[in-house]
Image (tube, rainbow, N blue to C red):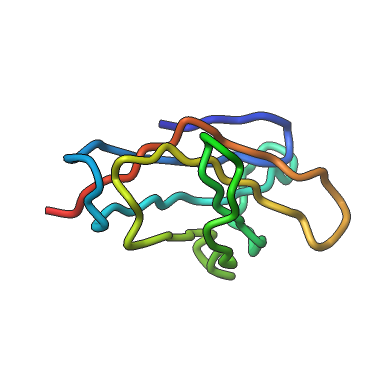
Length: 105
């Protein structure tokens, strides 16, 4: 699923659901910035929070080449949101909410 909030960023996010309390979930996606007509993968700081109460869970940087990020060993009973920050100062932060961890096969 692709979501675009501003002309500058696009997130590709996926998720699934498993039994309560399982710690095997993952959330991953891609951070892109629009350059003219093209979307380019970018390196950005991505923070993960529990949606229910806003508790900070983890932070990572998207890959410099592919723009991908990944959070692992998440509680499958929780719903999360991510915020990506543009450390270059060119664009505002963007968020994606209602993310449910996927369980790897």
